[in-house]
Amino acid sequence: MAGGAAMNYAPRVFFDRFSFADLTVLLVAVIWGASYTATKVALGSSGVLEFLAIRFAVTFLGMLPFFWRELVGRSSDYLYVGLLLGTVLFASFMFETYGVKNTSASNAAFLISLCVLFTPMLDSLFMRSKLDWPVIGVALLCVAGAAVISGGGGTGVSPGDLLVIVAALCRGVMVTATKKLTLGKTLSSGALTTVQMFTVACLATGAIFLQPGDAKIDLSLNWQFVAAIVFLTVLATGFAFYVQTHMVRETSPVRVAFLMGTEPVFGVACAVAFLGEALSWPTVVGGSIIVISMFVLESRKERISLPN
Image (cartoon, rainbow, N blue to C red; front, side):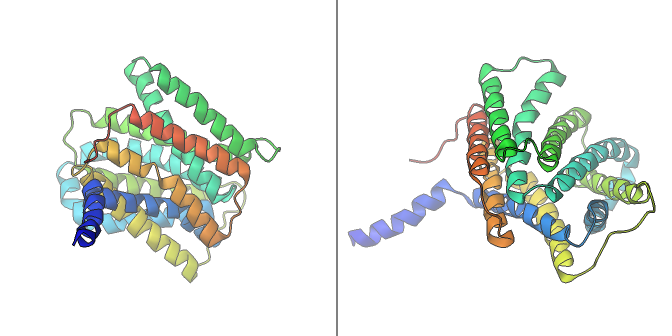
């Protein structure tokens, strides 16, 4: 009897500590971690701009039927904010995708998480508030971790790593700009995201034909590319953004931040499992420094209370 009670107690403790919302957010971290591998696969059959144009056009077309009524009612509000944010989003994904193409998926997964550091720093700059000294300390640790990852091979910072770091900065700008541009406005997140998807698709398509030299579309439709696009649009974009928006209401935002902080770990695991990437000690050491620093930074915002 005692043994049976103990066996029933263990799973109950697990599900008490991790709610359905928590587990769903963790699933998003897995999906976003795997997105670097999917992007790497897609880029084997496509150029960066073609990949971005198709990915965001498909996402836009998938979201439009659900949010077109809201867009028609207040099109000017959504266009103004959505076009501005969509331009920043395009820059973020362009730098990130070019970065993933020119570095390992493992490095990209770790380096993109620097956005968690850049966001409070940019927010402090725009809101003209002081940074706590622990944030500055974490910043120095993250710089050290990024330096170990990028310079561990003895050849200096690779172009791909540098591009991913710039993409992480753009992500921070995106979060800060979203906060400032939507402050005091009652805008639907879904409708606003739809305009952003449209903006990125248009900018990527236009950029294809503005490339120097003879414009040539670099695209080979095969099942690997199609599978990667379906995964990235349905799961890594539609499902993931829905969960992030709605499940945060069912759990603590800080818990969400901690769970999403595991994204680089899953990114590395997928890169090793599906791409056969070999982990170097600089990637492991530098990545560990960044991930631990992110957790330290988030832990300063609020304590996570778990049941005893």
